[in-house]
Length: 116
Length: 113
Image (tube, rainbow over all chains, first blue to last red):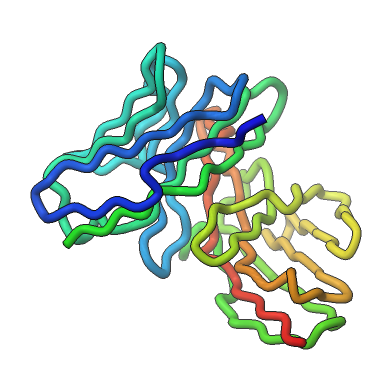
């Protein structure tokens, strides 16, 4: 059973370019979460999605960032007009969906974005 | 005050040592508690959930003190492979959002031969 997959693992962009990060959840999981880890910082929640729905985007920067999880295909985190401060590790996690209590999230290997 | 605070370390211990990590959280209405480990440049992996009664998994023991808003992790007989960053993680009970993991910055452990 393949785990959460993310690609690319490393992404280099120049300031002003767009970055697209992809996440395929574990088989059978319909809930996807994105977290960002800035250098020397803890992971911070960005967004929670289900298929074709954004459930909670309270952690997303107001501008330039967007996320989707289409009916078919991976979840995409899109960063437009990247700036140096966007350089970070972006982790995706998936879960089968909360039943009772908390739903365990399994993390992918992350995408390391470097903005030159 | 940060929502989840940990001693950043680093902790350097010899093999076989016992080491304890502490974590405090700011919100008394917190729902769930976990310890994750993160190896260098890798993803976080769930080590164990933390329950009010305390729980043990092999060499690892986790404790929760809700009154003091304090969580601990004890590692006995430490191995070289325990070297990693240990992340304290809390889910705050906020408007039904029982999915938003709040991470501490982590405590770096190095176990030396």
